Image 1 (tube, rainbow, N blue to C red):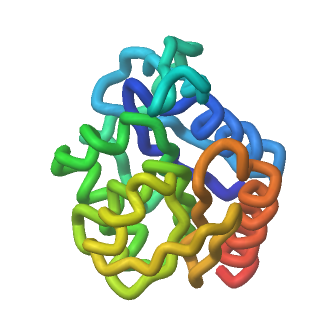
Image 2: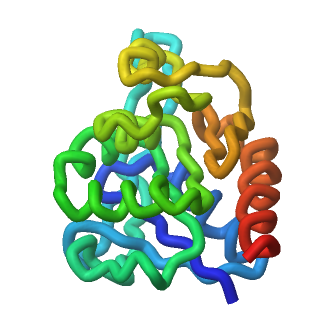
Length: 187
């Protein structure tokens, strides 16, 4: 059975995290959640409030962790998922997050980026020359990292599949599973 690694931490957006988590399982995959420690992750819910210039945030569910970043054996996994929220801005500074992310890019394995998830590979220079979607306010960051940002719900660039955020989940989920399945079938 193919296995995906969901790489995240506290303040990951709940829908950005839980939708792909369940979608890959629905598609016949196993998925392991990985964070800095084995403590449950505190997910957050981002809402758009007409009385606020930015999204507002409240605590969501807790998500159990299967393996800490330092113990991830990358050879066990067939695909990588990096959800959005605020988690990507702080997990990307960890050496093990870099090791894990670079492994999937170097081996051309399937990678799913949701919303702010693109911040992780961008900081390592891995999006240079690649097409990606992202949460619109970080478009400049992605372009400065050398990526071409496409404003669409399901951007596929080879092994990379991305979306702007949780409202894109129906289109993104289908595209993600196509990319993941294609890779497993080719192996």
